[in-house]
Structure formats: C-alpha cells, structure tokens
Image 1 (tube, helix red, strand yellow):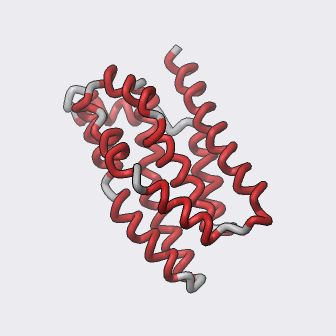
Image 2 (cartoon, rainbow, N blue to C red; image 1 turned 45 degrees about the vertical axis):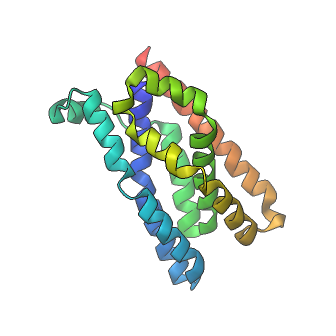
Length: 185
C-alpha cells in the first residue's frame, strides 16, 4: 500500500503542471471562460502534492533522508507515466478539454471508492493519509461541475475517443497496481 501511495504521490505532483499548461493553452486559444475555470481548479489542487508528501514523510518516520531515499529508489510506474504523457500531449497538441476526463475519473474514484480507500487509511493510519481525506471531503461536489464541463465542451461525434480515454485511465491505474505489486513481491 505504501508503494502504491508513492506512485499516487508522483501522479499528484503532475496535476498542478498539467492544469497550468491547460490554462496557458486555453488562454492562447482565446478560450478564457474554461481557462478561468481551470484556474479555479488550480487553486483547489494546489498543494495537494505537499499534503501527500507530508503523509509520506510521516510514513517514513518523519525522516527527510528516509523519504528522499524512498523517492529516489522508485520512479512513477510506467503505466501512470504513459497516462500522464497522453493527457499532456492532448493538452499541448490535441484537445485540452480532454484533461477533464482525467479530473472527472480521479474525482469519481476518490468519492466512490470509499471501501478500498477506507482500508488504505486503516492500514496506513488516518494521520498518514490526510491527502485521501482531503480529496474525499472536497471532491464530492466536483462531479457535477465535471459533468457540466463535459456537456459544454465535448462533441458527441467524438464520444468513442472520450470513452477510450476513460478506459485507458482505468487500464493504466490497474496496470500501475500490478507493476507496484510485482516490484514489492
């Protein structure tokens, strides 16, 4: 579970740069209303990586050197790197609105996976999983916002592509768990 939490930390660290890039691309395309919305999301997501890092620091005995060694010994799982690369490419060269698929998927996971997340909190400790609690508390109302954004900015003719992105995320997250399990075992 700790190894999976580290992989999650690596993903969370990329959220702020992806949102900043999305704001820049949308502003350059003169799509200011969605850029402002992503700017608001940036405020909400900003520092989640520091909260997750704090969790990991406590899980490593509050030792900066132990945490540094753990993070150096491990990189993001290849499936999660592929997922982030896909969405970064979409923001830069494809459809920046597609990042909402990423956001909606992860927010839905935080809200609806209470049983598996409860087990993670139970094993790692409530004081060591503050990032999970933060997401569960803050994200429930975001699902409606994500759905509204998707309705407003997504084209029905590209539905197959959107469903592919959702499936791809699910596959990447499943494969990242398998990758992590193989590393541990």
